[in-house]
Amino acid sequence: MDTTPRETQELVAGQVRRFRAGDGDAAEPLARRSLRMSLRTASALMRNREDAADVAQEVAVDVLGSLGRLRDPEAFDAWVHRITVRHAMRRLKKERSTRRTEAPLALLDEEGLRGAIPDGDIDSRLAARHALVGALSRLPARQRMALALRYVHDLPDAEIAAALGCRVGTVHALLSRGRRSLREDRQLVEVTLDLKEEG
Amino acid sequence: MLSDHDEALARAAFAPVRDIEPDEDLVARVVAQVGRRKKASPRFALAPARPRLALQALAALALLGAALYSVPVTRAAIEETGESVGGVFSGWLGGESAEAPGKPLEASEELPEYMEYLHDSKEPRVIAEAGRYKLYSYIGSAGGLNFELGGTGVGMGYESAAELGDAPLHLLDPGARRHADAQGHLPVFGIAVRSVSSVQLTYESGPPLRVSGVEGGFVLLAEPSRGPTEVIALDAGGKEIGREPINYPLVDESPQPPPPIERSGHASSGSHEP
Image (cartoon, rainbow over the protein chains, first blue to last red):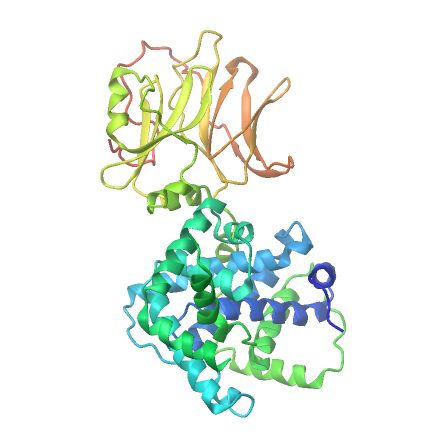
């Protein structure tokens, strides 16, 4: 049976309380949830799968290591997003400073997808993924981050603002500029159009 | 204006990453790392392991591979996840005007003659006010961050927001110690993170002074005779966010005639940049 967001939140809050109380078994579901969230965010931002996995791992270890400082156990997801922003921004800065130019299509587990998804879909998704990485790499880091939080996690503006540590008005501006830049990226428009038509 | 097309495009563009799942190896690696850290801390006692053979095997593999694939985790890294006072100003300095603290300086605002240059500076703001004191901030010509306590001649500059540090609260100076108002109050002023909505000045004796409506900066009118001890930052719910001791004399031990205009009051604040 599907759980509601509220039920999920309560379940996670219970795991946080158990973890804080010393229940080591609570580590695995919390680690998995943190990894899932941060891996998706980082995958939308990083140039390769290894970097995204590195960020996700750093975030998960930090999240679990700092749960004692989380006042409200129900704010676990917000805590993960906030720490993800910090780690991803740092990684993006480092990436920029090392002037990496390669953009491998490694973010989707291609081998894992084969068999589960028809070949045509995989090609379209990889092409979309490539185009997204290219388009995002031309945006300022905070715009990228705001877009990822909105379109990967469906976060409302207020929660994006909390994760980025800025005002809601700034989030509006970041999203607006980001969407405009994406719209002006012809390659991205073409491949996402293909993806939508196939879907 | 957001169009349905833009929204649909953005949603489609990010669709490929919305269903990514971490592999079991990655999960096990994190669990192993966290387990090791917990074992190192007597505060956490791990519960007896349940017979989850697959997970245990993966955790063992992760331990073997830890030397090849380790991620440094430091206390500093964790602390960096919190709000910092530098962060309040970094977005503004980075060009995001909507991030700016306080309110814009009105063109009609009357300033002391020596401060009129503020009207021509980049994005001058009033970030706090109390009594006759106003705390101004503006971006210098070289992109640095500057503060002026109006009417006192006290100003200070920072080359970047990072110089403000990681604390949630930062007292700007002892710089105004000779600038008591008519009632003998001395301005204690500073900046605070966005979640701080009020600040409280405590004394060695008597009730504290609390000021609400903090939006990036504050000015407190301290009574030096009661021995101010520290400034405590509070969020909207009254929870403490941070505190800073007042470990400098508010009153000069050897009174001197007021100097013409001070241009620097903070030992580590760098050069003032008009």
